[in-house]
Image 1 (cartoon, one colour):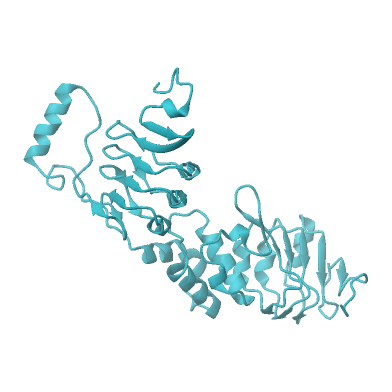
Image 2 (cartoon, one colour):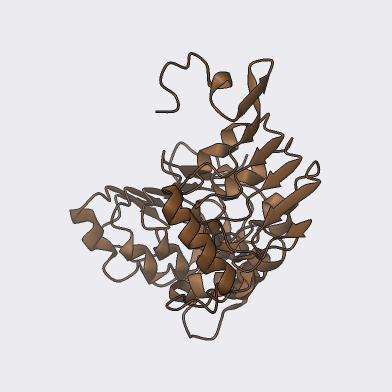
Length: 335
């Protein structure tokens, strides 16, 4: 109802603009609920954001870290939980940042607020009764009020989120590298829905000899050879003729939306991992021009009853369902 009759977002309550671009949002104690959407990152001219004194809940979105002009951020006296995304701490222009440190873990806040958020807006009598009760007891003393949830350190939260992928097995060299990279060099947090994908493709790239320093901070969909769909899911890995060494890790099976894999004409060796047979959307698999041995993974041919219609391995590999083998005839291997 706030927006009825408003002709421009610059006339919305609490909004100020410069040159037609939103630079200020101030909605202090406005009875707001819900969560802060990731789309706030699209307000790239935002300099001042004050949402304090409401009942906004959930995680602070990672997209706030894309507001490179943000100078002041006030989120205290709300119901936010979890970790402040590291990308927010990297905003060079940010000079003042407040959250409720009893509920949110923050490594770069300029000030913390440990007082509880205000009660939801209601009639005057209810407000007076709430104020009276609050004056007699602290939040932890009020009957029926649970203690604040424990704040899980970022590293522990990420390890927990990746538990299904990492498992309890002894970590491989590349698992360890990928996990250390996520924890120490990357700005990922446990709340990102693509955390598992990012970790898995990092394992794959480390196994193929990629440099983690060149990848940190970049969306995995922008990495060399990676193609994603409109929902940010990896659907293609094309690193043909890239002078790669090493082997393909079995973790590739967690990239369940993969449609096309082309790792041809490299120096890859070892076995073709069984995990590839779990990629039920796979349409194309090119692994020729490498040094793989043995035969195709068990059950690979079952995928040809689904979407897999194009398989090319080296001719020395026993393959009962390959469409062709070896380097294509029209490829000049001397160039």
